[in-house]
Amino acid sequence: MMFNLLAAVGRFIRATFSFISYTINTLFWATPIFILSVFKLIPLKVTRKYISMALDFCASGWVSVNTGIQKFFADYKIHVSGDTNLSKKDWYLVLANHQSWTDILILQRVFNGQIPFLKFFLKRELIYVPVLGLAWWALDFPFMRRYKKEFLAKHPHLKGKDLETTKKACEIFKFKPVSVMNFIEGTRFTKEKHERQESPYQGLLKPKSGGIGFVLTVMGEQLHKVVDVTIYYPNKIPTFYNFISGRLKNVYLHVNLHEITSDLLGDYANDMEYKKRLHQWVNKVWLEKEQTLLRLQKQAEVAK
Image (tube, rainbow, N blue to C red; front, side, top):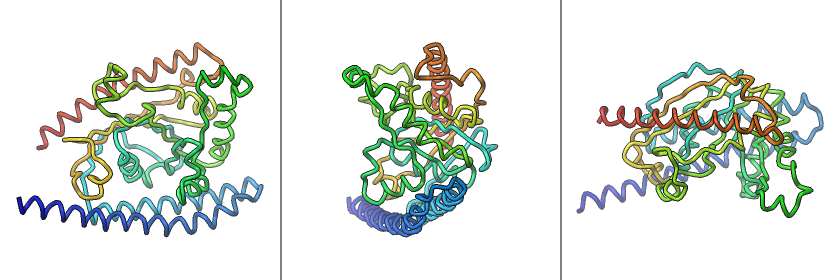
């Protein structure tokens, strides 16, 4: 009983210092990011390109220090397998299953310096998050406003606006390599959501092709490969507190690379055949991901 109490206190202290370190690191790198973001307002493409590169350098520095914090306070081992022949000079569409907020920190740690800095599509409302909202804007994270079918039925004049927003958000990506990140399940996995969806996949929610459909419509000819990442947590999916307190010990991550062929290009908003074809491709990827999850589970069990 006393041992468990001391262990819990130790984890709380570790989590507290870890969180404080993350906060200090975020504020430290936010300062040059905010200063550089002012120069983004200069309406010259060349200026914006180099300012964007400097901003990405700051973001990579932030991730590197975060990795150091993880190793010092709550280190965990990442078992990476698959095709990791990647380049910082290429354009990628990155897909992954989504189980926890820690997925983002793990993906940043694994791919930092290996591919261009990950850019996540964010809901437009997140731009108002203190400090981070402005930082995300400065780093060219695309902010999306997606309209539901019911809303468009009442406001038909807004049809196509979401695609226009995507085009505008991705304009900067034409001038330098980028990794566009998308969790195509649309939300984090839970057993309750899995049951409610009646998902046919073990350990996965149903994938949605709309997000990557818009990206491929706008940027398909620029993007070269799909980086398909499968994340598996032995024991249980960690909360953020589990992560910063050292409860997470192992993570298994597998990478598959897919070429972006002509079949994956089209007009998602207006071409129904393309929409159907992309949806079939996404389902095929998810079936393969289900098998990968099962292999990673067996690998983790053997390693115990």
